[in-house]
Length: 312
Image (cartoon, rainbow, N blue to C red; front, side):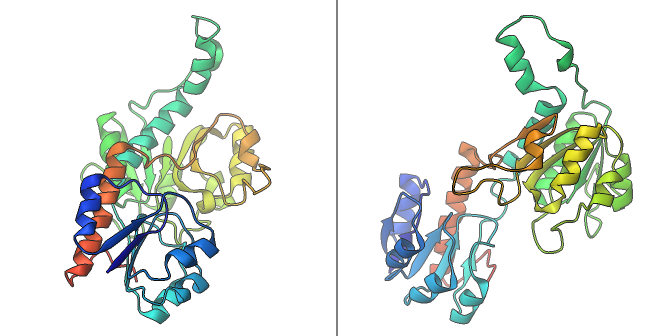
């Protein structure tokens, strides 16, 4: 059996040994073009993919492909119709980054509310804090979480550790300990810190419309640990300029912010009191090890005839 690790993924020696028990493993350490991906997958029975977009043509060309293991939770980068047409089972890697992303939500909130980047710059020229560093505590504030899945629920647990009142909203009530289920309206109107942790799918794209964002509590801190396709970035920027949103932090700007020519354009880049992050919330030693371990376990389960974490 030919197992192909299509792109750059950091498996440990022990994890590679586990894969090698089930066939010949070919590992690549870069990010292939579509043409290169087609060549690499030509004789693959099992493909492990972390970053490479798989078009219908790429999937169709993989004549021997029997199983696809994704080293991601999301799977929007593969052509589902082509996969379905060929009857190829696909597994993803859910839950591996829960702790890392939840912790990062508070790193972003604290960085924004306590002006940590500015504090670093001030400290390099003066031992005395300036007025621009006057911030706000988390203690006693209301933490609102939009999306109470695995990550959102863990964010709520951490919020309780800060002695925050924690409220949350999902499509269906979750009844999680210490987290009060509220309506969407109540979440927006009561949250001092609003953390966005919904899954990205058609039902959540654009969920924070202009009217919804204007419904938020004046002085709110907005933190998103998901893609910004859930909100209207232009309106967020306007509300930051107006002072309605006190500060904000985002894990991922909308697609198109960065183009191949190196041009950058996004209204949040010029807005005040914004912290930006390049999708780094998941990126810890621990989460990366859990991710690779889960991918190997998915392959082992498929070979044993009991595939798990199937998304297709």
